[in-house]
Length: 128
Figure 1 (tube, rainbow, N blue to C red):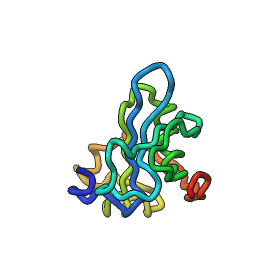
Figure 2: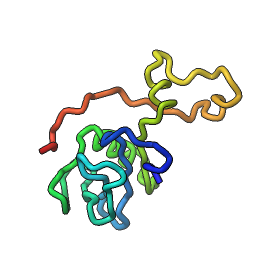
Figure 3: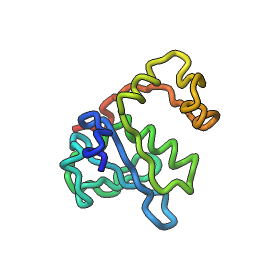
Figure 4: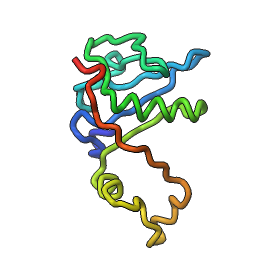
């Protein structure tokens, strides 16, 4: 669906799903795969601290994706899925010094519902 809707930015868009159970584990796409390559059997299982539990492809994960997803999964244990996209509109908003401006009826739908995370770079901590 992400590829079809063009919610992709090559390999830099991430989706994650919490794994049911007591352990804070989630599945995330492997580093370097585009959305048309990702299959259920290629997802990487990781814990909330960044330890890889299962990596069927051996590609590891994108560290920037881990930073974003682990922060949200840690803060919102009830969130089952997290997606981080690079849409043209999102890139435009993130490039503005003041972020999303409440200047139209459409933008007010997100009033006090938008969170920002300081950019930490994409150091290849786990990249091959």
